[in-house]
Image 1 (cartoon, rainbow, N blue to C red):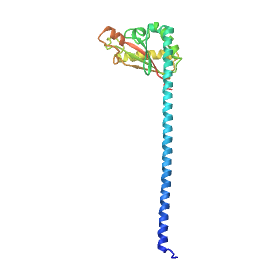
Image 2 (image 1 turned 90 degrees about the vertical axis):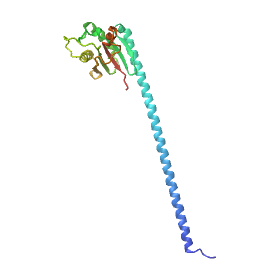
Image 3 (image 1 turned 45 degrees about the vertical axis):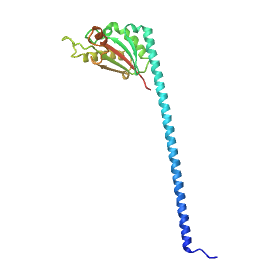
Image 4 (image 1 turned 180 degrees about the horizontal axis):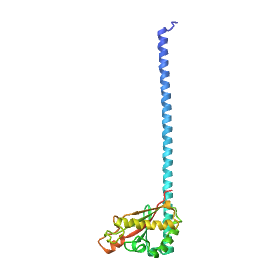
Length: 213
């Protein structure tokens, strides 16, 4: 029997090496695909878990806000606060609105003495809640008289907001929960063309902000 030549052995060895290299590439490619699949699976699980967590957190925040609103509504019923203020429940805050004459004399920024018991009753309820509180001052657009100590409605509204804030702080509401801002005549709720509209625009708002955590 004739023995294969050396050239044939070399070609056979080259073919075997090529097949081995191809098999190694296929193994590496398979491993890569497996790693990618595991990576995307973990990414999907993490995203789904975070989405569920966010939904649960939002639902919990909505439940807390609903509970806070109920507490404020009960305060209005318990103390008859609806006689001197109105309650507005928005998406992100609960607003207690006082028309200016209830708390302040015209052009003044000192709380009227007969308004203090009203505010003290409200403070009892505010202290039951951890929410941040923002006090807003608003006026109509009529210029202040020459005898006014304030140069503008802006300053008057800010002074009134701070007077309410200071009263809340003195009576036990934590300082870190409080802020105050004066908007002057720049956020009217009604037209300033009528006496009724101007009266509605002269107001103080105590805003109980929605808590997210």
